[in-house]
Image (cartoon, rainbow, N blue to C red):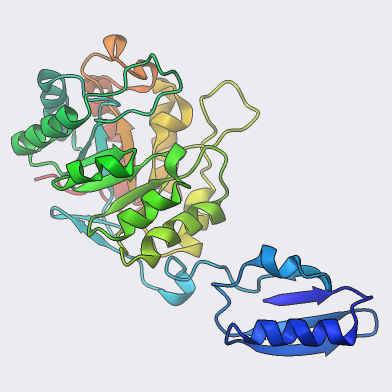
Length: 340
């Protein structure tokens, strides 16, 4: 970390600042130039708050030399993290495809969709039991019953399940869930993230609607700092000025996250665009960019879906998309995992 001092900073002010900084068990190095003075900090500065340092009256600016996230940083963990999820390896040399409906609506709906997804080549099952909706009058999900129906679908198909938690008070219901998803709206729900850090389950962390990649990685750090290293990053599109799609899928985020972090990267083309016809090209782009998994919404009857029907594929459309995903995945050397 480098601290730039104000030109008018007095010797006494600088001395007091140095003494305070060294209280954090870091070494300080005061460098006096012709036109400016800086203090270089050597040591672990991850627990030092930039805003607190900048509030000092003799400080002009503070710059970090290294990223503030340590656990998620590839510099400190050069090998890719590979998670074993009910026999599926996420983050390794195989591509995983997580598919299923936006919301769990009934036993018939989720089991029929799960069977169709598996037959098409999906390796995990997604489904919303709790649904965060913009309108309080929209379908909010079946909640605990939805999780029970997902577990029935798992028994029927053998597919591990991925579903979203929305509140700390619901966490006890997720004991049999294979991957707990944190939605975009909760990416910076730090109390929830810390609680998930104290459980021994993979956490699929979605990028916030208007969040930077560093903010996403810092949210992952919240989970990992509590002891849970099983974190999966998810690019699901960000809010931009473009109104023709629900969000803008940031394809560049995939190689950037893979460069900055060792954690697996998932892409959700359904939420990213909100348009079912765009799922195929966005999925292929994500595979070409090096993602570790796709999360695609599939519904046995999208026209009558209780949530987000416009962005969900029919089983037949999903099967056709999967054929192209499999072909491209083979070409880039990361074939789709065998769901059997």
